[in-house]
Length: 196
Length: 165
Image (cartoon, rainbow over all chains, first blue to last red):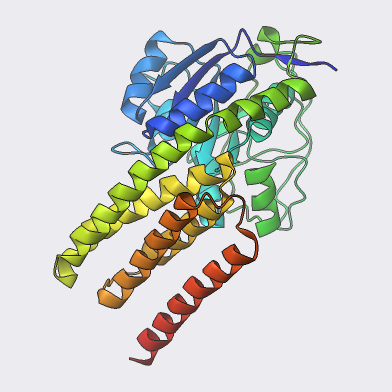
């Protein structure tokens, strides 16, 4: 059976818990990744990004002194950010809706609820490869389009007409993340985001 | 009124760096990766023992302090419980994740930690020590359910007393 070969992808693993870093790195290696760099905190990770062109950042939320959200915001909007478009998977033990929305609004691509499994981590990597999203810039947000076609929103529908796919990328937008907020999600939708 | 927005189509660099084929991540590769995690079990048991020592030290530190000074120690308890919660289930100790989560929820939103609240923390730490000491895997079956029910009953009783005051 076929699958994605991850050998050429660059991964940056950011977690202040050395055991968690070791676990994620071990899993990535077991999935065929060859280029995995670790960082013990957000500031360290930001410095690493200057030298290491990370394709996918796997980042914990609970860190100090710079927590995961602040790190994500720095990657996305820092004036000297080496790659504001880097794909970011946030590892989190937080499952409350307001937390998930907060991370989404900081600009993460995917969430992964802890405790992790190899299958769950791979599913997030695969989602990033197969479903690339355009980036949206508004006065209050910069990050991947927060509208996910596969989730059926029960909130107020602010979506507008389609934008034609660009030749620059593979993604097409059915709707536009126009920055209007809040976009509420049900607990089932939160669970789907966290657990795949 | 929605914000003015800009859409930036980012070239799909990732897709250009991966190939899809028989040398990629298939079902067998995933199973091998899960087995690699399982092989870390003995390391996990050492890590979590260290965490249990640390969390107990934070609890004892809180116990030795007056109520109004216990905040930082309790925050430390939360931090370690959060780590325990985030790891247990990866190594087959789902009950550790559940206990860690319960302890996190208990410590997260309270502002006052009197001796009764500390007793709840102590009971959770004792429960986690028992799970690891007796290598209770998964959610612990009926014994695990009884354990959780007992802890939840203690919390409920404490909440009832607190709301009556």
